[in-house]
Amino acid sequence: MATINYLLRSKSNAANLYVRFSNGRAYNITTVLPICIDPKFWDAKNQKIRNVIEVRNRDEINRNLAHLKLHIPDEFNKAFMAGEIIDVTWLSNTCNNFFSRPKQEKKGKIPKHKIYYTDFARWWIKEKSPDYLVNASSYMNEREQGKYLSFIGMVEDFEGRNKLRIKDVTARHITEFVKHLAEQSYASKTIQRHISRFKFFLFRAEELNMSVNNAFKQKVYVPKAEPLKEPYFNEEELEKIFNADLKGNKTLENVRDNLIIACWTGLRVSDFLGQLDISNFIDDFIEVTTQKTKTKVVIPVHPHVKRILINRKGKLPEKISDQKFNKYIKDICKELKFNELMKGGIYDKDKKRKVIGMYPKWKLITSHIGRRSFATMHYGKIPNSVIMGVCGWTKEDMMLHYIKKSNRQHAVELKQYWDKIYS
Image (cartoon, rainbow, N blue to C red; front, side, top):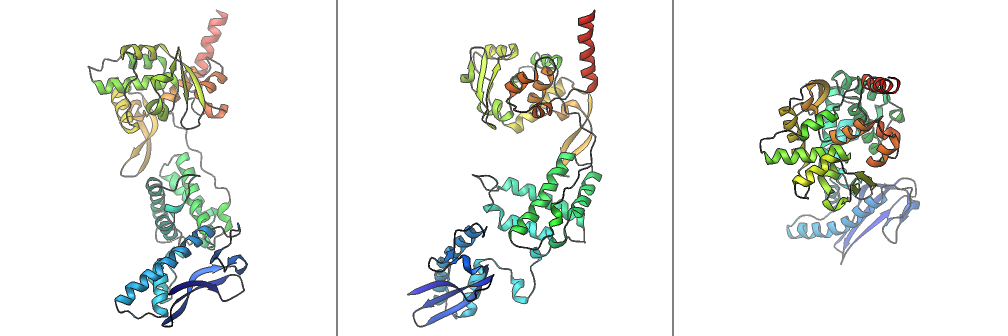
């Protein structure tokens, strides 16, 4: 009967774990595994690492050890029937193949992913990311992996032939990377996101007990960029959209009505294009629990929204994907000649990032314009607490992020107020 056991041959920290394979009197061979364990945390009886917080990757190690116990007998049967020699070399190769150990190790070479930052990052995405929890209930998906791979390519472009070694990276190197991005007109928010990604892989290396320089944890400052004037609709523009003659184009009419609802409710895309239903309309109010924050909001039904329901015989416009919605609202606004030049960012497929420049307003319009327009149109006309309550914001800073009026516009409104009071 074949048996597999794990054992330690040293009491020092950290001791190498060994695996012994025996099958009757014919086979009794032992080889070392590429796993180091503190003996005080090893449970010899249950053949696993004890459930202690000191060993952060204990679950991963225990899971692999359990799987290896199943893997070795399967490989033994294949090798035996194929007439292979069953010895310590066979057992060592079987274990190395199971743990996907690189062939370079046999030649005494250190794998590149244990030395260089970008090699490690690519290795981690391939080997570790599918089992990495991004939150309590989900693992890193292919879309998120793709974002990190794109980031790695940017670092490779930055470092050129002078590859960064993991143990050498400090905040100074990240700062140089930030300057590199700033010179290519990356937006401040995008740069901040890439700083987090840069540090992300260094934290992962640290978790794997690799040598890293703690100086990478120091704060990295992002150069202040000229703020972009994100577009919003004013009441006059919304009236123009509401009354637009779309020549019987049912698709554009459907998109137009969804856009009007977005602008007069302040709901997020996931709500007005996702879960909003006619059952949420109670008397003259919309009552809905937002999908993102699970906040219950109550919104009065605007006359434009009432007219849409009347025109559609009590039904809401059909749902549409966010991607198609973004495309068609641009088509509508282009048709309505919303051509005011604005500084903004448009995603470039070739460069795989937003390119900052001067564009006509219709090109910069996205599904976020609904929530932004709602907050901006009502700011200064009703108490901030009312806007926050309707949109489900708990902090005033969250609301102010959406307010896009210029200082000039605020001054004009103040002047109009004074004129009304003192005239």
